Image: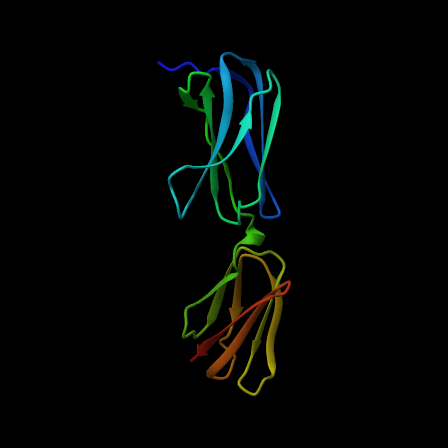
Length: 178
């Protein structure tokens, strides 16, 4: 049984802020304690690696900023180091990507379509969907979130080009109508 040399009043909290992570924690008691080693793990590198140290200050509030947090999921923990060099670990705190950090994803089905075509739009809200015939004429326009179902049974058979726009991001593709 390992007893932590510190008592946490507030466990480690990690908050994403524009590609950085702001880490905070509060201790209420520190006994024979030297320092914290802040460790990070990512989806690419699943092992925790040290990214910095924070010296003990008695009882109090601590902060650490990770400018390399990136936009993917990241896990953090504290290695709590005693004066004699022994150590234990805090609980793990994670930051997750915001939907706006993820790429716009669009899938259409069925393709080819006869009666209707479905659009599945991921990671964005307030998107605009446009469909054009091969002459460049717009045959459909709508704002959508999540899923959109378009009736195509009265469209002329052929290939159509679709465009989904979310802010400055645009995805395009083709649908075939029979």
